[in-house]
Image (cartoon, rainbow, N blue to C red; front, side):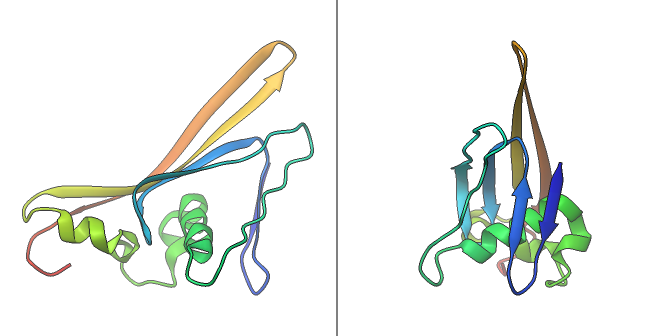
Length: 130
């Protein structure tokens, strides 16, 4: 079950979500993970933090994961979703990628099922500009 609503009051609901991992997405340089609690039907994760700490970047990254290019309509170029630091550290002529993945886990009787789904942005640095 997936539900996402983004607006003035942002809400993301991911049932059976165990972990969200980002690499080089927006303000997240390198690989960063958020572990989500799994407690039967009682799963709630609230993002709290000071201004400019990455809460909105998480919501935008999840919109990209759910909707692909349509989910990042707030920016004209998908490359703008790649971390500026990752772009600047990539040598000219080399490729880089940014991604968001969600790992799902559920227990059915004695069997545990885990799946990881990833959405990727790939780019190649052709010049000195980011």
